[in-house]
Image 1: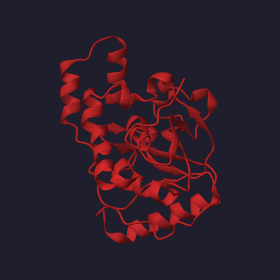
Image 2 (image 1 turned 30 degrees about the vertical axis):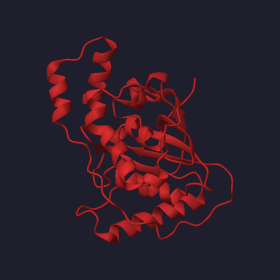
Image 3 (image 1 turned 45 degrees about the horizontal axis):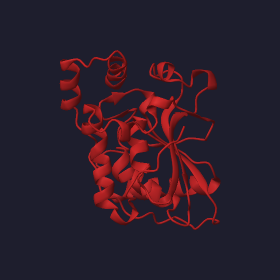
Length: 231
């Protein structure tokens, strides 16, 4: 069981162990970095688009994209595994093929896919960590992009190549580009988790710094209030 899984189980039981809190507090959030503007980011037809991003715990990934202008929906879920294993207990085992991911619906007239990628690589995830982000480890926490169109796949490949040559990170980028095989929304209690639990030690240490980095790096792109999952 991961640290986060233990916290979820303890919270459900109404308890949080002191030792568990100290473990979370000792864990450091991924360090935000400034990344270059994508060199390849062509305009697309003026209609809503969807894209899927996996970058560790979906609480933080969702929390960031909910605050990006042009995003109309950011839903936490499980991507690229089977439908019958698309639940938190199964995915937490690390052997379902699923990644914790967020499906982002956005208006390309306001924010491009390339800009969403820039946000991803600069404040959402550390692309040099294999199957791990923050204190969480396992294939379900892998860094992966799941383009939903050939154009998105082209932009993703070009940007990873651009970043690999940029020298932003000393270690190689291990972020995967995966074919989109399916996305299943996560349980209701995972939706809007950062908004609903701002004082959670896990959120305070690992995810709120990402939101602050978004606001610092991209003030013109940050919306004043997050767009929430309803129902």
